[in-house]
Image 1: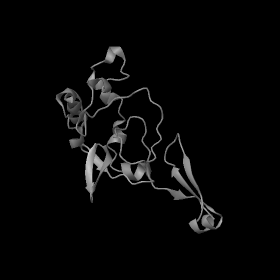
Image 2: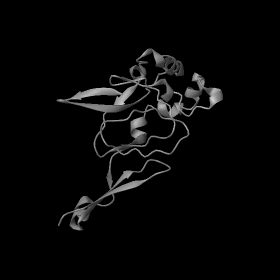
Image 3: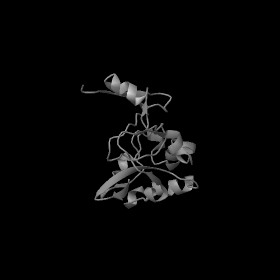
Image 4: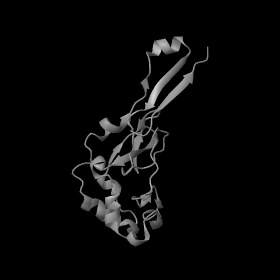
Amino acid sequence: MRWEEIGEELMSVGYLLPRPTTKEQVLQCLKDFENGDNKITSISQAYRLDTGTGWDVPTGVLHTPGSLCTYEPQKASYVFAMYQSLTGDSIVPVELLWKNTPEERMHDFDLLIEVMDWELNVDPDFKKNRFMTPLPVRSMEEMQADGYLEKWICYKSDAFCAKELTILDN
């Protein structure tokens, strides 16, 4: 997780791998997992989280939990692997790097690279392709006149969609 200073507050932001990050760089970070800070965030790029927005985060895309509530519905996956070894000042247990790994592939770092969707992780247009700003379903004026606001909040996933409905106090 990266931290960005915004006025008096610290706000966490998610991360991805910018080009020209290589699989070898990620592999080295994974091999350094038990050495304290594996510095995977040093080869990552961050995006500020904005309240009320969301991200389409398909299976296989590396990301961090954020400190704000955003919309990020995700498909269930048989893989859980925590690639970041240090969050804040807390060391992540190595068991979380290997969670859900088949016994015969335990400690096979190549597997951890295989389960990543590499092209999505290094997509130079990730924000354009995956970031979601709420979209009104009709004009705001019409909805306000009818006593409600309705917005698409998740609309870039092939598995999920969601709307936000606010009933106005008339």
